Amino acid sequence: MKVNDDAREKLLEEVAGLTDDEVNWKPSEDKWSVRQILEHLYLMEGGVAKTIQSQLGSGEHHSTSDKPIERTVDRTQKVEAPDFARPGDTFCKLEELKSKLNESHNGLQKIENTVPADQLEAKSYPHPVFGEMSLAQYIPFVGYHELRHIEQIQEVKEAMHASK
Image 1 (cartoon, rainbow, N blue to C red):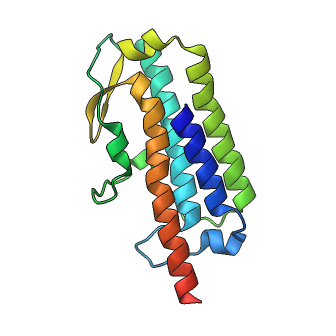
Image 2: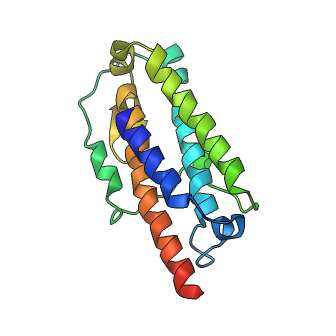
Image 3: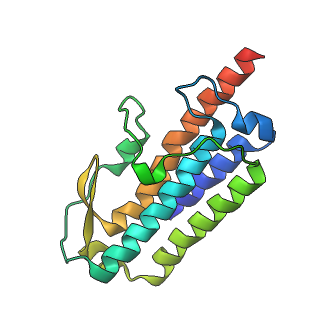
């Protein structure tokens, strides 16, 4: 989970010092606020953890080749968030968001620490962009996904400072 831990550290540095009002500020009606991005990240991380657990319990053995998940950081490819990871519009405090991010991160960390790697490699689940992907690759995918959204947070912050 090195890429995940590094991404989380960068993410928390990126939002450090933002007020709750700044976290909830939207650059436009069709763009996400920092809060919505953070909510999307913990929903996605939690959803991946649930999917892995579910597939470990009931999924068929189906090995697959490694996918180029590091391409996830390329924001020239627009990807729609799946329904389970779409954020709402409710005002939220940064500390509450950090707590939920910590909870989802710990859940994924627990899977990596307790499930043998060969079990994660032996099963797969379809990814909307990469196709059939091993459960093992879903863990670092979350880190690359987070790095992608750190760039988005930087753009929101730039728009916020430009509007002042």
